[in-house]
Image (cartoon, rainbow, N blue to C red; front, top):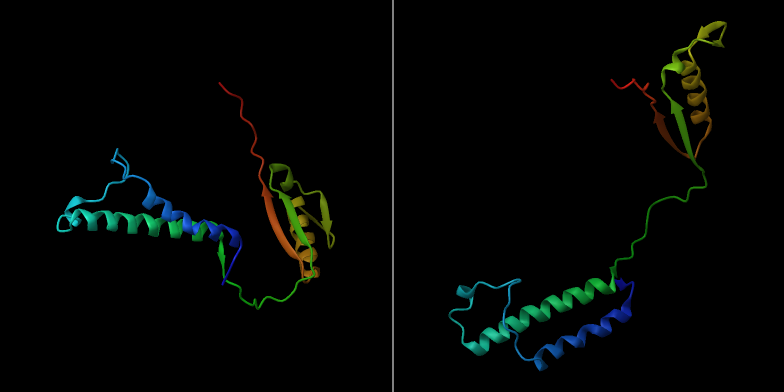
Length: 141
């Protein structure tokens, strides 16, 4: 395990400053249930509160330092490209003005055919697909 910001760990001794400060009177905020500390002497109550504050400080500083676990990845290096295809699905794509094998096909069918061939030929590339649907705007009353 290593840390992204190991110098942040230099803040850990700052928790000892809590011992130098006078005890604060609770004014709202997080309060601990008193019945948990009812059987403790006042000195032990103060020690328990300090221990909870110290634990919170240590955890906060540890999170600030950014712990990281290094692992070997089984991923293979990829040398492909990132490609995004945008396909229009508006009403104009239904118009049959393309030819494929001597038959008239819609624009959408032509795009599907060409896109399928394109994707099949792109080995090793990462391909994304965005569908663009444009709805006709109806006049407002």
